[in-house]
Length: 214
Ligand code: AP5
Ligand code: ZN
Image 1 (cartoon, rainbow, N blue to C red):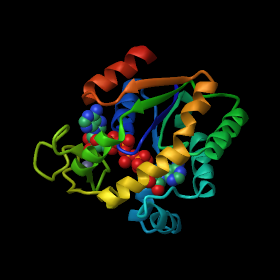
Image 2 (cartoon, rainbow, N blue to C red):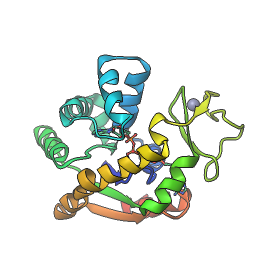
Image 3 (cartoon, rainbow, N blue to C red):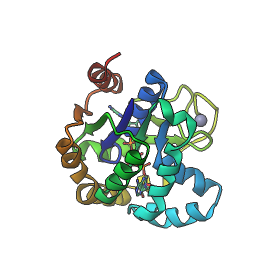
């Protein structure tokens, strides 16, 4: 199964993509996670990406499209994959289509997790991320067992640099301008699924699996 997760920042793409990837045994490819791993290792790519991410802006298309195209050629992607945070602009979507055409395949579904902006700001303020493994928690909706400690790897939980309220507002406006048009793009290809992302985490997963099939 080849899937794309669409949705505003904080809509729950990462949370759901992880669950769907486990359920269907496919790799979870998050461009945000790839950039954060590079920032942590202080690579050239990480240093460049950080400049944009900290301002709530998108990293330029040319820094991201080849990374994804190369990742899709790896063996584990033969059984399918779930893209989280990519594509994020129409040019990225077009370059993804080209990469898939070369591989003689196409996407099955684009899953749009729909959450109004008001809910997003509230959610982001409670998000905590593991410094070691990147796992995501929420102080209220998916709290770790021990305060500020990751359940899986015992890493410390921190607030992401780009989760400051002003940056969240900027990310939302960038989403509306640059990423939301992808909803029409995938609707036009007849592969768009929209699910209500305001209900609790398990319910969102259930509604996605209901549509994809068990
Ligand atoms: P990225 O990491 O992709 O960030 P994002 O799209 O802004 O999405 P988030 O990770 O913030 O949120 P999410 O939708 O995954 O929500 P989550 O599951 O964590 O990108 C970061 C930056 O990298 C971008 O701003 C950009 O600069 C750059 N970048 C990345 N990809 C790029 C690309 N392709 N091109 C250019 N630049 C790129 O959930 C949020 C919180 O809510 C969590 O605390 C969670 O526990 C909680 N939660 C989730 N679901 C629910 C629910 N149903 N009810 C209650 N709480 C919930
Ligand atoms: Zn962890």
